[in-house]
Image 1 (tube, protein in one colour):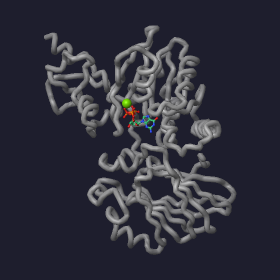
Image 2 (cartoon, rainbow, N blue to C red; image 1 turned 120 degrees about the vertical axis):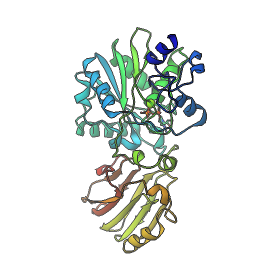
Image 3 (cartoon, rainbow, N blue to C red; image 1 turned 90 degrees about the vertical axis):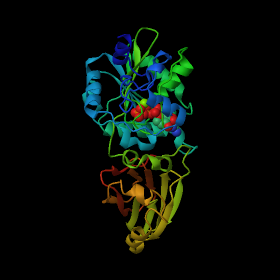
Image 4 (cartoon, protein in one colour; image 1 turned 180 degrees about the horizontal axis):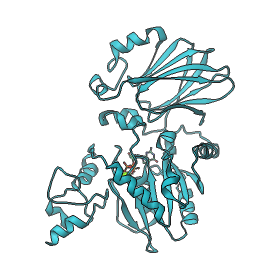
Length: 374
Ligand SMILES: Nc1nc2c(ncn2[C@@H]2O[C@H](COP(=O)(O)OP(=O)(O)OP(=O)(O)O)[C@@H](O)[C@H]2O)c(=O)[nH]1
Ligand SMILES: [Mg+2]
């Protein structure tokens, strides 16, 4: 009886899932013998931690929206984490609707991925402008790297300033570093022996996890929202290592004439249709193969060499990815723009006389023009 009660009421200390000892193939399973261990984590967390396993359990998005919606009824500070490398892809556009009158602190994570010589103040202004344009009202904006410990003192300062004795809900899209950030708080700023499960694959945290604070309040980790408009959600997990940078990106500069095409692996095609000769700077994972060709040859090249000479994803992996749609983009003269491709990165357009571009990306992936970040 005791054991059954345990398996029904307690949740995994790593990912928040309800624990159960009955069905090994269902979420929350752990062998009954492991129940006595402290802290109690599910078998999936155990495997992610010890074998780096790519587990794929989808969080029920309805349950998740309920959880997010319930924040509106609480008195709390909401920390919205976004990934600087996938800014527009990871921003929760309707966040205000969910959180009610609670203040929102925007934390922009993974700044370590940008090239070294970045001006953080300029970047912060850019973030503020973009967030405002998206209709997000924030009490403050903080930039950091939770993993590489950059700018974290600003996170601490902001938490102290805005929490005012309340609970803290940490929300965001999948994989932006919510659990990593909370782990850093626990490790560097408390005596607790807790660790949330993190992994390079999206969808790690499965339910809310409460981390107690000294004043009786809590920091609450939440599952990430799944946006299928991010490339990282639609490529097979086997390809994520090539798609997501783990080190500072080395930008690649290409001088192109109109009538030239770039392929980013076999994942995206970028046509420079019209405009003066100009340079394009690629901010994408350096593990992706870039191939330049003539626009008139691009169709044939793709048909003959996708998944092979052009680079990954492999033919087999490509089968699981939606077919391309074309995005025609016009960069006006005299403005600095990025072609942003959610989950892939961006291409900075460096011309002064404008450009006509065609971008082919898997259907559903967010592709847009934005003011240049850098
Ligand atoms: N480069 C870099 N990677 C980071 C940073 N913070 C987290 N990561 C990595 O991003 C991946 C996802 O981190 P998690 O903490 O699991 O992300 P999450 O937001 O909790 O993800 P879900 O639980 O799926 O919603 C892991 O591989 C982390 O190591 C950072 O500041 N810089
Ligand atoms: Mg998490």
